[in-house]
Amino acid sequence: MSFFKKIFNKSSNEPRKLTKVNQLLVDDIIVLTDSFALPESLRGQEFQVKAVNSYEFEEKVQTEWALIGTNALEIFLSLEVDDITELKLSLKIQHEDVETLFDLDSFSEVFDEPGEAFLEKKADSNITALWSSEQYQQSVFAKVGFFHRKDHRSENLSAYEGKDSGEQFELYSLYNEDQSKGIDVEVWQDGDTEVCLTLFKPLSDIIDMYPAS
Image (cartoon, rainbow, N blue to C red; front, side):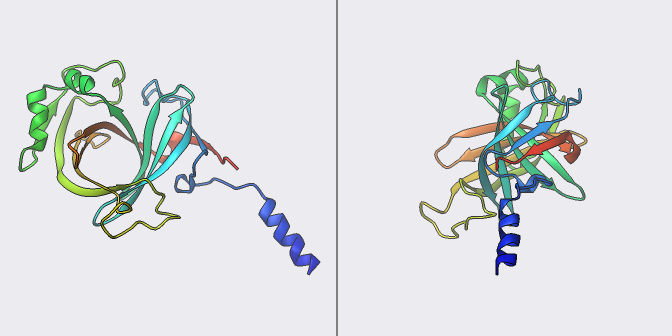
C-alpha cells in the first residue's frame, strides 16, 4: 500500500506541464515571439489568461482565451483549425477606430444581404497598425452563435433557453486576400455591436507557456 501511495503522491505533486495551446487555463501565461511580423504591441510580450469562454456554433464549439498583457493590452486568442491549425489573435476596436479605418457607408454594407461587402482601408488609428489589411472581402453573413462565459472543456453548455443558454449573437466576417488578417463583427440581441481585427499566425509565434500551478 505504501508503495502505491508513494507513486500517487509523486504524480499529484508534479507541476502541471503546458505543451499545447489548447491546454491553457486561467492565470497561465504565454510569451509571443518578437518577430517584426507582429504588431509592436504584441512583440515579445507576455500575456496572462484572465478568462476562458466558449463560442457555440451549429457545427462546432470554439474555445476563447481572454488575455491581458504586461503592457495592459487586452486581446483574445482562439485556435483556427482547418488544413492546418493557426493562432487567431483578436483585438477589439472602438467606433472611432472603425471610422478611421473605413468609410462608414461602405462598412454598413457588411450588414446588407447577401453579405458581399468589400472594404478598403482609409488609414490606421493609433492601435491598428499591422493589425489591419489594405482590403477585405466578406465571407460570413449573419451566422448565429451563442457566447458562454464557461470553459466547455470542463463545464457543460446548456442546450436549453434560459440564463445558462449563453448570449445569442450574429457573426459577420471579412478576410484579406491571403486570409492572414480579418474582421469579426458580432451583433448582440440588445443591439450592441462589437468589432475585432483578427490576425492568423503560426502556432510557433507562441514561444513559451508557463502554467499558473
